[in-house]
Image 1: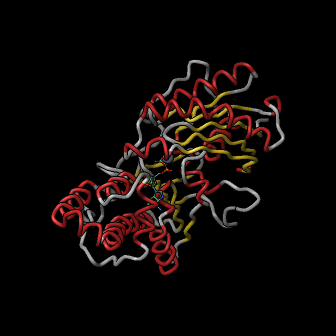
Image 2: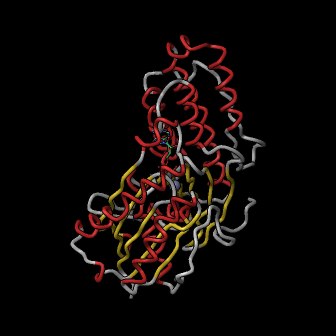
Image 3: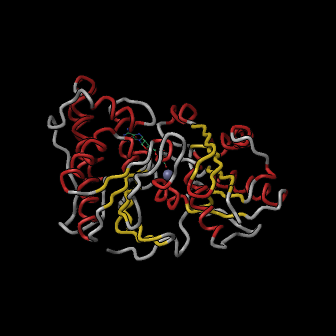
Length: 349
Ligand code: KG4
Ligand code: ZN
């Protein structure tokens, strides 16, 4: 029986290693971000990401094993994110996982990174466990620098895409906006911080909701509106009004995201809502979601930040559940920049 896996995540700019056991118990999770390496460029440089993964991965694996007092021979499987993501970055994790699986004769499973995000609420450790009455089905919004998608998580391994952004991801617009107002990378946490002392009504930014049933999203109009406003204000005023700009911009993103989530929960009569991905760290989103969920009788689950941002624990859990039902991949497993057919079903609501 497969009960303990080593999981590797290198799909973007976080190198992460975890050991996960059945029931979603995280025995160890160690990660290294690359924020300083990408900061001078104001965004992720794929080649730099791959290079940093190459340096960080093996040392992190050693730390993860030591932390949980385990040896390779104690493991039952190797799990790795093989899609979607930056190809060069994925290859680092994939080749490492394949080599270890071969040497230690362990079953291997390539995981869809987004499935990991969707299953994050099931992870548990000494400091966190999911609410007792939390179960399938639930509506989940995966919001990060690379993706902004809304799902109906119906049952294990059965995920329906309800809507996604037609252009930029929410985290990406936070990062781009931060750059426009002179904050560094990654911009999301910096905008969040600035916004705390700003007036969310000071400026008006568009909320793109399409018609009143649509679950699709779009943030490029918001980004252009911000660029126009900042240009008309000029550098001096932009700096002076930065807190208000951040608060107003953040309010537009957060209101749009929550509107879509609530709409989806109502449309599918599902009273459970999950927020996951790096942007779910946003303090205003958390406040608004908590208040609105309480008011409308939804159960809101936001996994702790260590399981919301890119991490190998969520990948380990997703892979473990699949290995346990007999799935595995051979030594010819490849990386993919995009999803595989069948990862999600039904693109339209
Ligand atoms: O999930 P994640 O760690 O990595 C990706 O898969 O992209 O998400 C990172 C994204 C970045 O765009 C970052 O700016 C955003 O999440 N982010 C935030 C906050 N913390 C991180 N956005 C808004 N408010 C935050 N507090
Ligand atoms: Zn992610």
